[in-house]
Image (cartoon, rainbow, N blue to C red; front, side, top):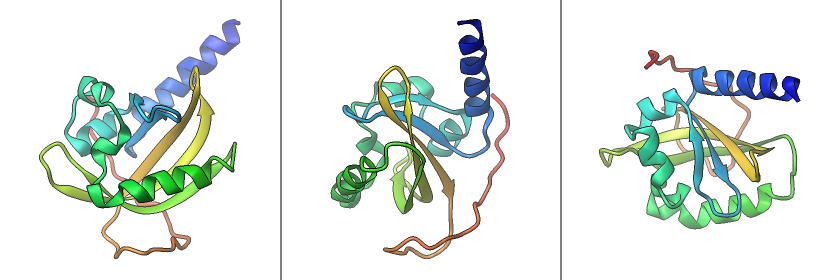
Length: 142
């Protein structure tokens, strides 16, 4: 039991301090369960604002709502491992949009959940994601 606690602490430390914006959301309800410091900086929302959003759709542009549903249904077929979701348009708190190269990882976070990471990108949109190197951004610690 003590080892499980240490693993949770290590995961939380890696998640919180990772330079790429990440969030964990409940797969069934699509609510944010956790966000890291890089996501807070990138999107402009506080942690409590993220966690009070009723759905992850709140950071998506309205034109990508159907794409999100379709993608999540397909990613449910891959219970473990990484799903490369491609480039998406996300909305910041100030209303501006960013392009992010998104990947999902299934995990158990007291319930079925997905960890999403999204590296900001400036490359043109593609309907079919191609292999590419990750773009890393650094953020200062809170």
